[in-house]
Image 1 (cartoon, rainbow, N blue to C red):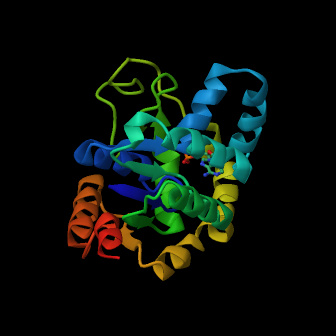
Image 2 (cartoon, rainbow, N blue to C red):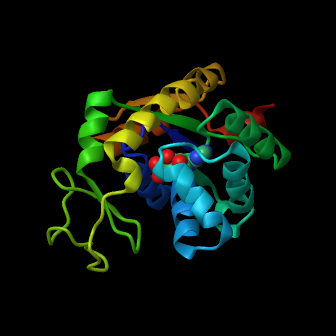
Length: 226
Ligand code: AMP
């Protein structure tokens, strides 16, 4: 199974990608997590990355593409992968397509998780993350067992800098201009699977799995038919 999952910020891509990766036993590849990890490790590029992210901007296409290029050659991606947060621009989509063609692999689907700005703002304002392990919570919809602390390592939860209102506005603008066109791009390639992201997380997972189950043939089958 090889999937792309895209949609507006905080729509639940990370949660769904993580669940799907466990279910289908494939790698969960998140460019956002990789970038945040690079910031935690420090070093020369860390500050540069932090500046892009904290202001709600995208990192340059080449930087995001390099993360994916390095990640997809890892052994755990051989059985398949779910790309969470990549591609985010048309240029990245083209890069991904050529990367995959070179490796003679194909996407099975591009899951488009959608929700209105109003829902996004509500989700973003309640999102809290563990700075240690990166696990994400929502104070109302997915609270931790002990208020304000991570269930896994008891670390104090934080609000992401890029979840502050100014950065969120910027991220929504960039999403509309840079990322939303991917919808047509994948629709044209008959890969688009639109899913209502306003439902609760379990309902979204169920809807995605049902839609994947209904796909006429997997990309692998399609190639075999040629
Ligand atoms: P996410 O965790 O997916 O919301 O990503 C957090 C931030 O990381 C984004 O707002 C961007 O600044 C950066 N980022 C993640 N993926 C990409 C990408 N494919 N291209 C450019 N920037 C990215």
